Image (cartoon, rainbow, N blue to C red; front, side):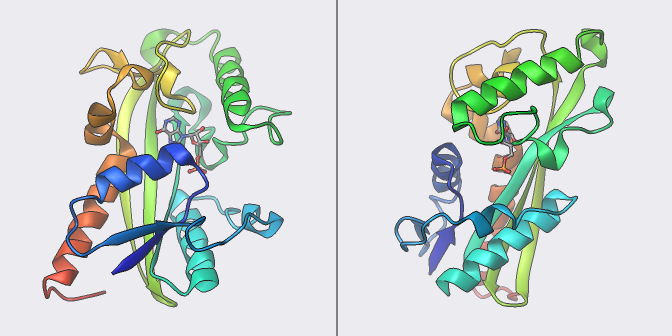
Length: 213
Ligand code: IMP
């Protein structure tokens, strides 16, 4: 089966390719492979209040555009001391960052988060990354998988790998931020890892004769 992975993020694409690599008979293609250029309309698709609704809207949009079974995810950071913010607005959190390229926007988002948490003790800086992955095989036929990972928001960035809030997100059991993890460690622990492993298990079970929903 050809499956379109609908993301414009190179980081996410690499992670997702790794996570679905062992599903037999699956050929992953990306938006460039199928020639779907970025449009302003695409940005407006993720306008909902939950990760699940956004992932489903994105997968539905690109399934329609490509005619292929499509997977899309929506993910973000929920910080308890901020009432769950930035949540579904994680990408466009910092004022003025909307139109900046990825790395600059990430840096501004991290600075904004640190400013908001300035007076919050480390023990109260609990947070989680959340990912919802939606699979749309054809119009009206979808499944959604969710993954979460708990952590703490540090007072300053640590580590050089990863993207987004990774340098501030401290995973207590490993004693490292997500920007200090190897790719294998991040795949094993991350919200995206959990969601896409569940999606991979579903694909495997439906390809080997399980009930397809
Ligand atoms: P989206 O799923 O592309 O809408 O991403 C939302 C935003 O959440 C990203 O731009 C990052 O700021 C943040 N985010 C999601 N997943 C991760 C992760 O694995 N590490 C760091 N930041 C993440």
